[in-house]
Amino acid sequence: MSDQATMINTGAAVLAVVVLIIRFKINPAVSLVIGSAYLGLSAGLGTEKTVETIATGFGDIMAEVGLLIAFGVLTGAMLQETGAIERLVQTLVRVFGVNRMPYALSLTVATALQSIYLDVLLVISAPLARSTAAKMNRKGTARMATALAIGGECGIVLTVPGVGALALAGLLGVPLGKMLLFGLVLVIPTVTIAVAVMCFLFDRGWWNEERDEQPYPGEEQSDSVGVQPVPGTGESESGSAPGTGGVAVVAPAQTAVRTPLPLLLAPLLTALLLIAAGAVLEVAEIHHPMIAFLSTPVIALLIGLVGTSVVGRRSIGIDRIQRSIATGFQESGQILILTGVGGSLAATVAATGLGDILGDYFTASTAAPLLMVWAIAAVLHIAVGSVTISAITAAGILAPVAPALGIDPVLIALAAGAGSLFAVHVTSNTFWLLQSLMGQTTRGTLKTCSVGVSIASVVAILLIMPLSLVL
Image (tube, rainbow, N blue to C red; front, side, top):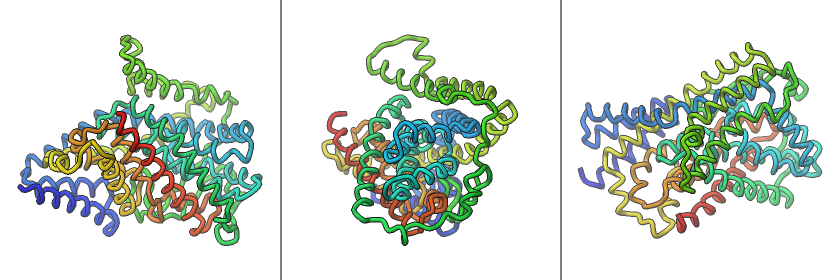
């Protein structure tokens, strides 16, 4: 088959996935498998080879990141149940003061809290963000809504253990410790700059309380423990199909025993430090069998999971911990399936030889390949409406191309993540969550969420491109 035919068939497969998700409301995981099957057959792989490639790609990525995603989601579910996240936000208010909270909250959400399922994290944080906004000197709702949007979305794809970051690392063969370190180096300035730009715009009059804000419905009831209705029609970052409606999330009850907050968070932070330490020692070419074992991502996150379970049992009892684990398994299921079929697409694209074809068009001597990665993910996100799905799909397309580009795979992973942040809009469940939970109109949410996260996307790729000259 000619190179041109291969590229056309690949484009048709991706377009088919988008149409199936958007027009026919077919689940993204099913759509990705259909797209992979079409690509394999149209590329001449044959029926047996196509099925084998899809299954092998799914299995390979599950072996790479399946346990990592499961451990991360389960740890987050237990932290949610213990009330650790609510207490952390309250502590941030006390330590940093009200007017610095947009920066403190966005950075905390983007880094330390990425094991928490995003919808749940927003529901937990929003009441405290609203109360903080009311105490700020100016434009409180705009600032705090922007902080939640930028921090939450950036963390998903740029910070380990965000599910998007884990999937990108697995698909592109990036060591998780390296993804963690480079992700942190990128996400901190990206979030800080994006929040600063948005606050500057708000201070210069780009926010109208009368047109951009609306009374939060049932304010008194919403701040209490209970179920929060979400009016969205878009897609959850868990990967549910667009048009399936919003999700209802139950906020955690108060802890039975007042366990110190550092103790509740210590197991997760220990796990992340172990992973980072392993990456640093590998670069320094220092080898120690025990440290190498403990810093292995699966073992490190297992330590975090077991530690959180032990601390959680002392804090709220075994029954509530077991219930939170059951919830975590439900949340992780569709994330795992989506990540796996992203691996199927990557394997099918690799089997068609697209990597060698595109490698002839791009060289590592310029920043163009990274811009291509960013643009592909951005276009997919605009079409599909999900940060996670667009990042995974872009990585699946680009995984076989990475060796030919001659660029460090971690930069390709981060560029795909950055592109997937561009233009979060009305097809995203996060958009409607932020509108409802932060008391914004659609016009206001387009500013805080769509524009705010898009600025973060552009800032991130501008920070990534110079790195290609030194790595």
